[in-house]
Structures are given as structure tokens and as C-alpha cells.
Length: 297
Image 1: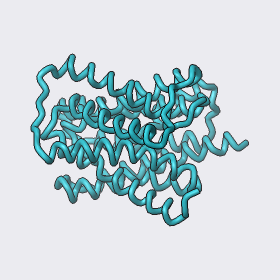
Image 2 (image 1 turned 180 degrees about the vertical axis):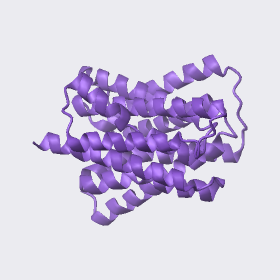
Image 3 (image 1 turned 45 degrees about the horizontal axis):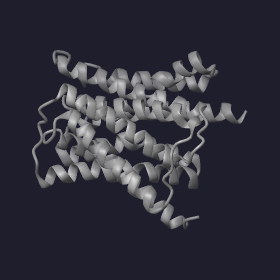
Image 4 (image 1 turned 60 degrees about the vertical axis):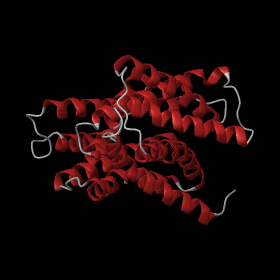
């Protein structure tokens, strides 16, 4: 059991690093082509996770009962989420892109009802509508150039990222792991790494990479700090802090990212983006607490 001050320090570092991830991704998109960027960051994260498990003598083969969870999270939350996110951020502002990726209730709510028999209630329906309204604000003419076809395509890819994340949320909710979560994350990241490498070799055979200290820094930050450390820190915080505190703080990241993106890469901070982020956050909170109320009933 770690001290309370250590937990809160990890919590703050996690929130800061998470709010910096998307501006750093946007910066890195000028240095590395998107599919190789995705492969590079997941490869760095995978290496860090495996080394940590080996150092703590926690590395183990996954159990048979873990295969489904490894496949779903490795494919949808890690590989496809990263691929679509890096392709999408090429044509959109980092803050805008981050908000779209947090629109998971648009997929979690209907999929949970259709495939897992989850019940709909007023709070969950209200959260879904808030999230839908927030995404609608992002797609409005005041926030998206309707004549820019690439921006529409990129927005669609980022919603696919949210869908992949949503599929993983449902899998984690309804499948019980056999092995410890860090062990699962190691094998999930290995699967994601192999998939990202295959996609990069297939669609970007001539890697466009500017080799420089900046490139190395971007990969180390997105891979080790936002990736390997972020996954470990999120598990620790969710275990040690009240769920209301961790959930609310995690869902505030899109708003904070708007400010870090404005400061680091000079993106415009508009009222439409702030409104959209607030609606998506409130919608996600409503769906999260509605599910916890159902589980406790």
C-alpha cells in the first residue's frame, strides 16, 4: 500500500501527461508518418511494460481464459485506436481530435443494450444525448470546415477510435481476467505492436521519418510516459482513489487538452470546442455513474 501523497503525486503526473499527449502527437505528426508513428509508440510502450514485468519478476504467459480479452483490447483499444487516432490527427486540431475520441458513450450505450442485455435508464439516456449533442457541435459549420473533405474523413476515423475504445470498455466490463492486469497489458501491447507493424509495412512501405532528437523525444513521451507509465498509473489510481474522483478527473482531460494544445501548438481555443468538450464529459460521466448504479442495484 503506497502512501496517500504518493498516490496523489502519481495522479497529478498522469493527468498532466495525458493532457499533453495529443499536442505531442500533433507535433510528432510532422516528424513521422502516422502508421509508423503508431507502431513506434506502441513498440516503446510494449518494451517498457515487458521490462518492468521482467524486473519485478511478474512476467508470465497468459492463461487460456485471457485470450479473448487480450484479443479484443489489443486489437480495438490499442492497435485500431492508435492507428485511427494518428491518421485523424493529421487533418484536425489536437483538442478537437481528443474530444471525438472520448465520445465512447455513443457506442457503449447501444452496444451494451443490443449485445449484453444492459438496461437503459433516464441517466444513461441523458448521457448518451449529451454526448451526441457534443459531437454535433464539433461537426457544426462553426467548428468544422464543411468544404474540407479530409476533415470529415479524419473526424470519422476518430469516431472509429472511440468505437474501438467502447468495444474494449464493454469487454473489460463483461469478461473476467484470469491473469493480473499488467500481464494482460503486456500481451495486449505485443499483439497491437504486431498489427501496427503489419499495417505500416502494408500501407506505408517507405517510412517517412525525420530522425532527430525531437523524434526520439516524441516516441519516448507517447510510448513510455503516456503509454507504459500511463497504463500503470491509471490502474493504481483506480485502485487507490474513490471512483468518483478518478472518473471525474480522467474525463476532464479533453478540456485540459484544449488549453495545452493552445499553449504548445498554437491551436485556437474556441467557445464551440469548450462547449463540445463539456457536453461530451458530462455525457460520459452520466453514463459511467448510471452503469455503476445499475451494478450496485
